[in-house]
Image (cartoon, rainbow, N blue to C red; front, side):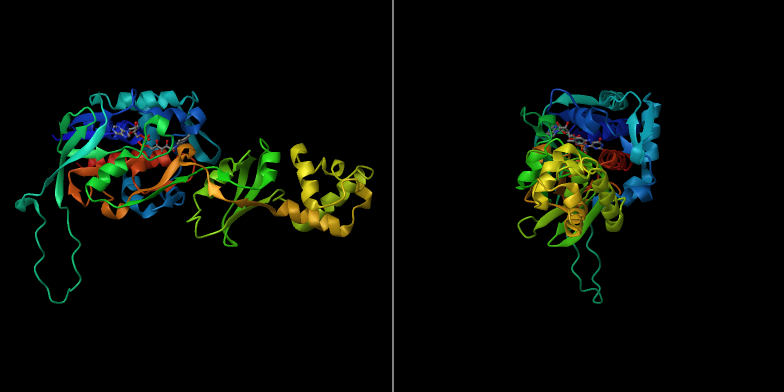
Length: 429
Ligand SMILES: Cc1cc2nc3c(=O)[nH]c(=O)nc-3n(C[C@H](O)[C@H](O)[C@H](O)COP(=O)(O)OP(=O)(O)OC[C@H]3O[C@@H](n4cnc5c(N)ncnc54)[C@H](O)[C@@H]3O)c2cc1C
């Protein structure tokens, strides 16, 4: 039986606690917020998209950063096991569009309470982890040097240099443990408790932190048209994201114009493809009518204009576009607003088709980290064992959940990452 200390009582921390208790370990969870699992309450717009009902193979296609790191943990604890676990805890589940799994109650609180029930038997202590307690490895603990072989001149990577024996809390109290799991989450939505502490703890043990950037986040555009159409949600459109003129993301779905740029599910997914915005230029192109080819759209517009022959330009667009987009389209089109539908030339119709198929939105920045769904970046997975989640820098130190440099699209994938990495930790102690 090991003495296990878990830093962070979020999705990963509570899952790890429950699994470790079931393995017979003595478990303490340090949580610096008044209540554990606060982020769970804001997930899925308060409904908690708890996982995605897909196979491990399909799942990995939705992981944006370091999917290979998850091979082992996801194979051992795939979405089916998450569903089984919650159902076993009394949560009825339903599968919605895109195989997103939600509680039938549509209440994220139900998932939080189920996780707390699962973690029963662990002691939850209200304190923050300030510092890792690290001790140099005793000579007997150091990994044995490989016998010299002149054929292999490649230098061996250094093994762990220290052992983590616990944590000093912000209260000043020391918590000693055989295994310390850092499950402190990322940097987004800091009001839920994830304030990036895990990165500082990891750095203390010599870990590399891949720069944390907001992901699954709204995008900022200086284009005044966005503000003019703020609140307009477009369904069944295609958004293509271009990096230095090359398409790097292309998907159909729903998006939204806001006072600062664009948002909505398509935008959030596109955001996880952005690279270094100081080095590259980005713009989004929206195909407002993806179901129609340019020719089909031209014919459709021609029919509309014949029906609305005496309407001025904006009025001629009533069947084609939502009302808040019509004046903006007329301005972009550059047509005299007084032009009657039956006076619009072929060339002007072709221009309109082009605008509908390639509505351009320059992208200037990511939305801020505080409002991102997840943080991309974090503890480099090169320095963590993918099977056990143990640090390669310090024995007895482990990581799980969003603190790791692993992230995925929306759809229940990110909670599943927290769950499977947590289970891998507990089941390999
Ligand atoms: C608005 C929003 C909606 C989302 N919706 C979904 C969704 O529907 N489906 C999905 O799969 N994912 C969703 N996510 C992402 C998902 O919530 C996270 O990926 C997941 O919660 C990560 O789990 P975690 O345990 O690693 O971190 P967290 O859940 O952030 O938990 C970390 C915990 O550690 C505690 N902590 C931090 N530092 C310390 C410290 N020094 N000492 C003690 N405790 C500490 C924090 O208070 C917190 O309780 C959403 C995220 C947001 C912001």
